[in-house]
Image (cartoon, rainbow, N blue to C red; front, side, top):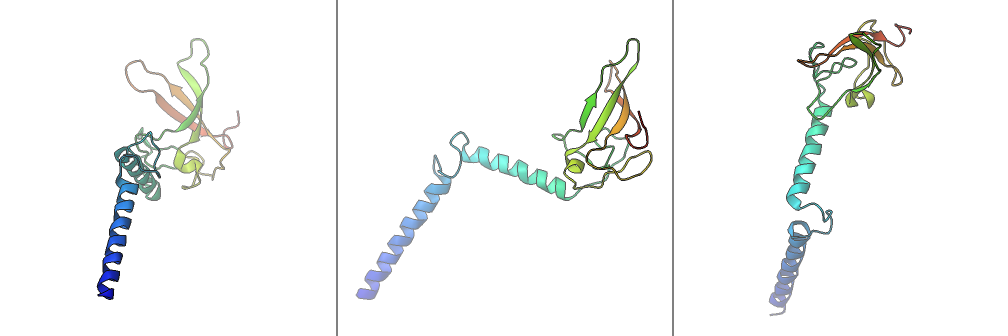
Length: 154
């Protein structure tokens, strides 16, 4: 009789703990997640972060002429990643603008080796590429890499 009473108490305690855990993580307002996000939104954001981490882990080399490839580390970029650039104003009557390319989030975080596509030397995080940007009204702008700040002194 006494063993069955203890067994009943253990089962009751297990049910209470299961209910508490379920309501804690799957309830309407779980305390571990921000109240502005629902659990579905939190899972969607977490999934995006995992996909981004997976993309960073497997750095794929792409065709250097493609528009979705970093010119410094040659890694393929996903749609949300952008190359960090600085474009300077063009001179009057000029068809192009001078531009400095710093790199993509992958090579700026030291996840991939940074090399100049012209001279082939290793680049530091402070180095940049010097480019010409030809602005087109009918299609995307065209970038022509001239070299890095070490091989092309301005």
